[in-house]
Image (tube, rainbow, N blue to C red; front, side, top):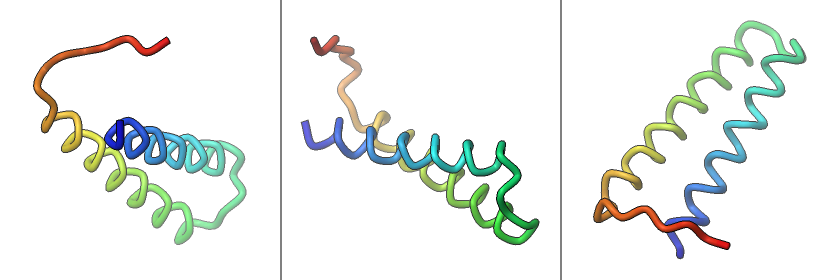
Length: 60
């Protein structure tokens, strides 16, 4: 389950970044930094998912 919370935390942060970028609340430098952070977080999520054993389990 630790992996689930790791993924959730990263995806939640990416969603926050998207909201900030969509709201035009930042300048170009901050927007670039946020974009890079989002890309790094998504890469980490991909790595976590790649480590899985290929099973998808629906949680209720």
